[in-house]
Length: 320
Image 1: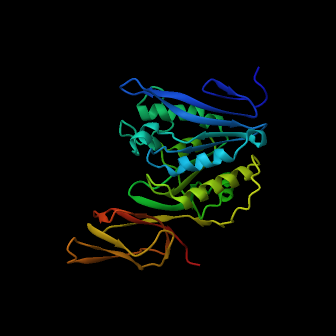
Image 2: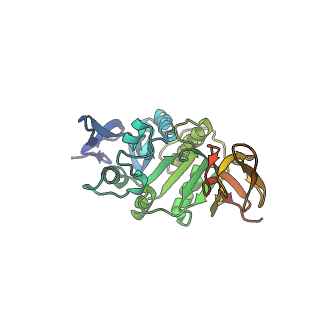
Image 3: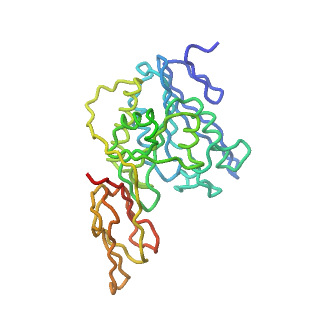
């Protein structure tokens, strides 16, 4: 008979006050090398919420891998109330190849909830839902911007759901952005099961960003204290997050070489010049202006742009 609040993941029973590393089989490479989903389960001494942390659903988004490592380093099972399910690398295939995608070129975060007999992406999504999401009461999914952009640290969540909004407020990132869920995303699939989930966006692909990692680690610590899972006894800085209801992309009206005059996190005014686009010889110069008042939450890092490319992402600020 299982002891009180023993948790079973992939047919492995993890008793209270124990931490266990599991490698759940996913597939085999053409060489027959086995690829597994790494999961660290920390089951607390007392029952409580079951929080999952996931990173690298896009294999080149590595800030979250380090965030989870630092969180696990701070947790002792005997002081934990509830269960922490940590999956530092969900897309192991992409992580190895330093790629956003799976070998079938599918985006894992458009493949949830998946099926047991579908594509590789669909099978991995199904496995994650079965073993992780279905055993959780709350979730935090960690991301960075897609190459070649960089993101300001931000929480994206359904702020119209009161429970999720309180969850997001507890994380205390600089920005808290209301975002509806996309079909096929992990956030959508978890929300369909009534599980509050936060998506943390910060930094850029294939780069460690110290500030983004620090805010992510402290945010998870705040969340665990809010859920009464753990007491870290640390003096964390209050950020007082700004709630955002709408965002807008500024797109390149022409192709060329982009010169931005603004920085990530900067506030801009309507019609403010954000930069300019030239040709390779400097014969022409086209000004890029902000369509609205807002905060720069993402910007492109590669100066070579095509017409229609998203170059600056703004969190829109209502007139005071």
